Image (cartoon, rainbow, N blue to C red; front, side):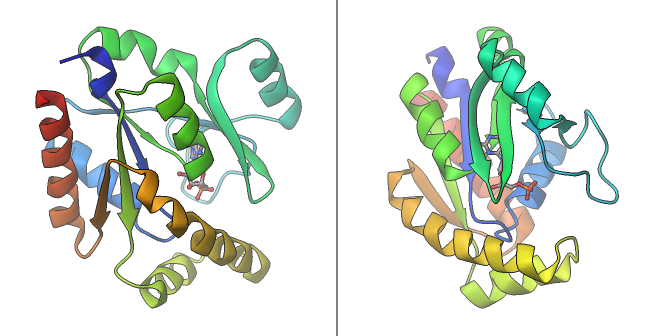
Length: 188
Ligand code: 5GP
């Protein structure tokens, strides 16, 4: 097994349920660790700095890019999101499986830097379901929802670039399916 296969990238449109699935995966398999991203978007109710994201100003985010502290980043619906380098290299060298839950542009960049990484795309069962989930969580206003829905349609087209595609019908099944795929790629 090479170190890079310990790096796992999970993407999927906003509302696909990927965050919930990955959280469940880590409850079921606590040896797997999540990379905490940095972002310039505002904190949603219930989120915690340093737990859900590290929340930064645009100036600070750009400073970290300039100092090469960010492994990959992308702009998504008007905000920066990026993976701090410190979240990845030491952990995969130490044999830890690390999951990055990131959007499609960042995922493609990670695959360029780490061709051995395992990339997994989570699809919602249907567009209707995705819209329902996005509205149901009540964390975005209508304009933000529309922007995320448009981006979701664009993002679906990237699924073909991933090593694996899974459909999020039920959280537990999807979490186990992803875990099995991670193991399969680490055995190759
Ligand atoms: P949200 O605002 O819903 O938390 O995240 C918006 C999008 O940004 C999601 O697709 C999420 O996976 C993605 N994202 C979160 N962290 C990162 C990151 O570090 N890098 C990239 N490229 N995308 C990220």
